[in-house]
Length: 153
Image (cartoon, rainbow, N blue to C red; front, side, top):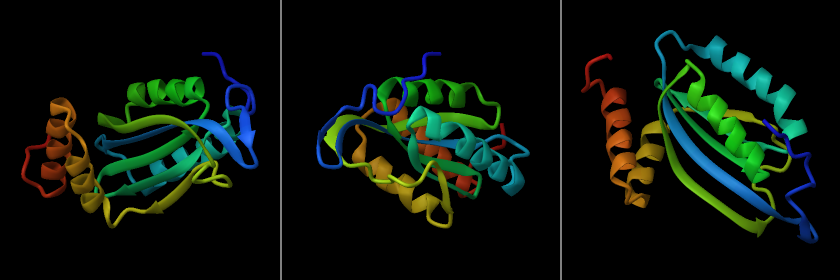
């Protein structure tokens, strides 16, 4: 994995503006993932994300992760590949990806944990904003799991 230092690959184009890659995903937590496991994830993010130029937020609630990542494209994609292989995640669904010139939404957050009480509402909003059949099916599966309508794998 090549890590692009912050500033290389997100070149400023004006005061506070950079070319930033943004990726939002959700996933179902694997069996056994609890609040202490999430605290370890946040601790690791605080150690690694600053050197990768990645900022964002993580929401965890009712067995679902929802995360917003922003930074250099190669670094965010490398982190996503790591997350897809992480046994703590199941059914990883990319909700949105974009690259544009803008300010960071979370400039001071190397990764912050946000209360997860509204995970279901976030997933319903994501269903309304995606047309990809695979993502729709995975999002519906996650919501059914939240509501207890699907069997445990």
